[in-house]
Length: 170
View 1 (cartoon, rainbow, N blue to C red):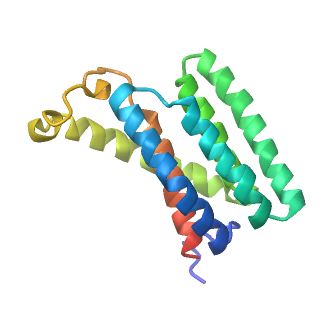
View 2: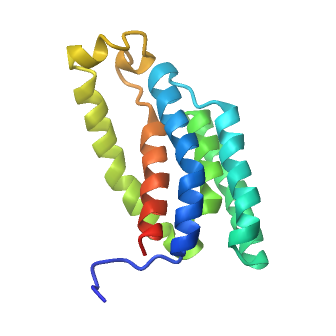
């Protein structure tokens, strides 16, 4: 085994099923955050529902309930950070809905993945919004004109999908 390649605790089956079921929701979150700088509560609830239902079939009972606890811990932490204006409330809620999908032993890898994807998505967003051919197609998108705010939903959604994709490929 290559020592530079992390082995994930999330199984390929879990990665594939969770990934395929959460992909449309993550794309929806990225779209609404880019276009309106909002992550809709319906998207957060839909992602949480995917875990609640599919997790019953994919995880052992004990692990299932521990992962549900991940949601609570991240939600409380996220709201505390949101009150400090570290990031938006929608970002906090979406991160909380993502949390149960992450196996506890994979947390370090997911944080590294997020730390890598955040500057990449930020840079891509800043570059793409300067391209007239793209900006003119969707001139009403709120994220184009935000001087400081960044649609964090694209980085969060990318993290969710890449993590589950890596798990799916074993």
